[in-house]
Image 1 (cartoon, rainbow, N blue to C red):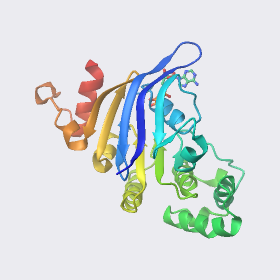
Image 2 (cartoon, rainbow, N blue to C red; image 1 turned 90 degrees about the vertical axis):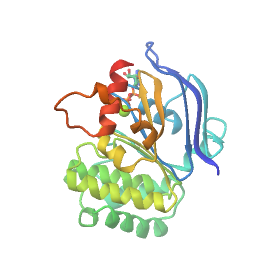
Image 3 (cartoon, rainbow, N blue to C red; image 1 turned 120 degrees about the vertical axis):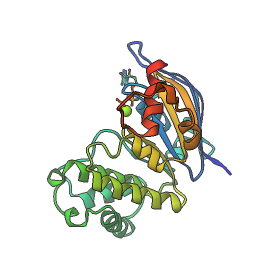
Image 4 (cartoon, rainbow, N blue to C red; image 1 turned 60 degrees about the horizontal axis):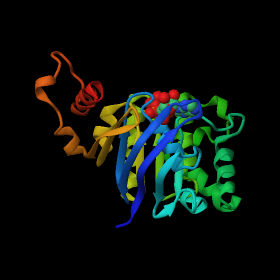
Length: 252
Ligand SMILES: Nc1ncnc2c1ncn2[C@@H]1O[C@H](COP(=O)(O)OP(=O)(O)OP(=O)(O)O)[C@@H](O)[C@H]1O
Ligand SMILES: [Mg+2]
């Protein structure tokens, strides 16, 4: 089967000298739920920025369903739905218009976009907010609107950069259910999160990045098997993935 994403030896140095990526290679098979984990500043958003064409890479290659992210950029980008880390929709607009406008960028006519937008708003629990200005949404609702916006052009590959930051426990669980239904429909998902129980709950594959380098990459079970029982801290009650993460990123 074709891979949704193939990244080979990706390097990125920002102006000013920060080396954000030191040669990252990652493959995400079609239909996967892939979680990219790493401490603050590890390089996760930089990878996503390069994959989505928002950040210029220094070297390496990125292919989205076989389409090069630079030489075949328009096709590659059209296959991706991005829910970015920062809230970045126009909060003076109504959620339904945020979605219909976004569809317009992909050439989807209003009469097609409008019912699709209404359905997404229902699916994401935002139906009663659809026609109020964005400022009236709570933080968690704004995140869900960003997920809806990422899906309006029906992409095959959904990229979520910390979509559940600041979302309460119950809503987070309903978002997990929603994301699971998307993967059942065949959508490939790349998720970054600092809630490791979220990755443990959802991911088929996990990669851990630290200081611009991938330090672990495998199935969730393979990553969990890296757990060093002798290094466990007494009285510590985090989940198993969280302990693996702390052990790896602390010593690396
Ligand atoms: N536009 C930029 N210009 C200069 N340096 C940048 C820029 N964006 C990110 N960086 C630097 O690149 C490194 C990686 O940042 P990045 O945002 O990719 O990390 P992250 O893994 O997404 O972190 P977080 O979990 O905090 O979101 C950091 O050292 C950061 O300061
Ligand atoms: Mg980030």
